[in-house]
Image (cartoon, rainbow over all chains, first blue to last red; front, side):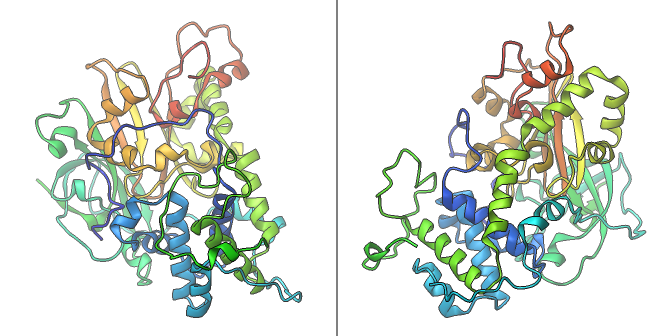
Length: 226
Length: 224
């Protein structure tokens, strides 16, 4: 979707300001939001593309006015609710900030992530790469164009390359296709390429003639541009 | 669970302040913000349902606060600077070589290493979210996830580099890599002049996180 998350090429956000000696987390709630997201992800009730898609549903003004882990919390609440793991009443309580009082008889369910499972879970290569023998549609060195498409759902072709011409620089092999994967419509495995776009092709004559942007794009995002 | 009476009259109009609302410098008795209360409420709900074990959350957090971070990537860079055969393999098949070192896994399943040279400078961004190579660099800094970086890196990479105090000569080619898929990129920065006698360990100490993202370069005399 053409959401506020698709930021490449926008103006007006000001300089990049790095924080010296930045801590990994800036607040305890960020630690918990991070942990909750990964721990709930371990249930495998949704995939990474669904997580990204959920965060992208945030209204544009809210997305731009909130921080990274607030995006994560928005996405997690949405997924929990969509999958029926949290009822509408429970979600409303959470959003009002009302904690659940412990009943005293809580059993961690079988299948929940436990501390001893964390190293294995993080090393588990749950890759989006697939072994399917899918033929590439394009060859390294071939001229391609990013299709001028505007999917309403999740997609990974950024707006700033759509309609622009590039050259296939690297064929990375076969990967799950995010657009269908996020929608629960299958993995549709296909090749992913790093496509080189000249800076002037994307940004006009004011850009450097030497510079370029490499964008990782799936077969379905591309068409031949002989 | 702390008392939350002060929250009852809250008008819920969601004034999100974004960055570090419970900064340690902030007094401890300050009212909890909306987001703090929400995260706390969600954790208590999911714990009560038996869906999460809070100890697993602690272990996840501890992993990225104390075990996995940019020192991993710095070791790889220093080794590549001192061992030409390793560097060749790293550039050819980063995933395999990093797996051998144990620097593989979540958000680093498929890795590509990009070499900076006197003629090419690589820089990595994720304009659509904040994809970042966790096993070698840890979790991304706030600026990497922020709108200024995600918007400008692709349209004005030289301007972003200037924000980091780096001015590249015009004849150096800048290649920006937008991590839109599941490939994760690590920049192999240039080894600085005057480091011939240094050990691998001493070299690793010079390598900064930002140089491995490509928004900075490695300098002798310590990280900036």
